[in-house]
Length: 120
Image 1: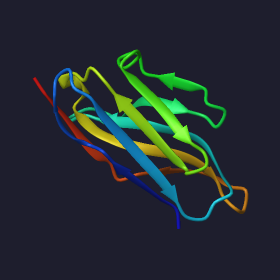
Image 2: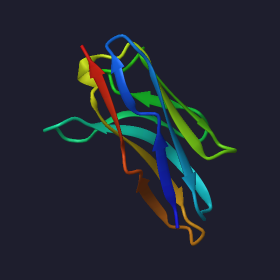
Image 3: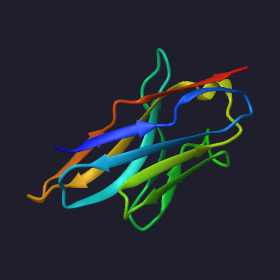
Image 4: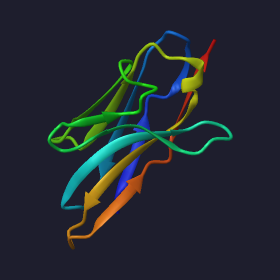
């Protein structure tokens, strides 16, 4: 059974920093793309950043230059370093991992989310 467990959310003042981490556990063949998404109250879930196995990254325009996504393929983890946080970054942040199963299926998995609150 595959699980994604996020950690690192919390309350921070505007201009501050937080680091989110997500660990993938369970039985699978490989992890493809990993990423972070967020959902603010009353809004749809949106992409924050993604990273593929080779290290190529993609960021939402709203976080470029402030957030950095990274992954540790040996530990099956993905992290999001968030600097210069703004009140509009307040949201529940979800970890996502696209896995290839041992039966060669490709399935997207999601964590339960971690709340980030940025006060002004």
